[in-house]
Length: 248
Image (cartoon, rainbow, N blue to C red; front, side, top):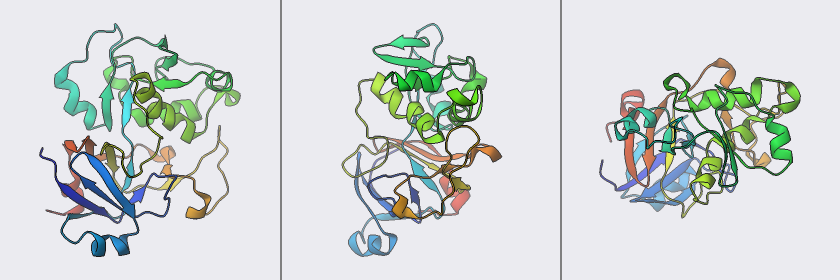
């Protein structure tokens, strides 16, 4: 689909730089502004506005082991992957690849915390198994399953499933959304959001943005749907209008 200038409002933005941001401007292939919704319309009156109230907007997932045998991913699977919030698929097996330990947490267990404590960056993937292509299930497995002493926080697991895969692909990314980044992101349906520590321990906190801790979906109640998946300004998957009733 074509690129343009779009202002998303009412959102919860996964951003460590501006955790209070509730609006984001996308121009062609870049995120060019984030900030408060009450300023957005005044600053960008000519942008196409999309009300995505309550939706979480995050960086997209990377399937770092999209094919078990290292063969090139099937181009026809792009739309299916995008519907799960996956913006990049990398061929290759699990194990060490280019200094990154690639894991398929739904197919195998691993000492996640031991690996990260030793300085080994992690990336996650499906190992080419169709039933294992829900990336939030990867996050859930790494943060909630296996020996408690080896689990990671949900945020660390999420970064492995996003930033870790980009690192394997040779792409730098801060792990959260900010201006001047490529417009590659996912809009998720409204969902209960939380901060979860390692294992079953949940941090006691209020949803105060001054904590500067990005929110993630509460995965104990399931997996949110990807409503819109965008890569470098190109919409790969889109059911946002069906859910919000916004016809643009």
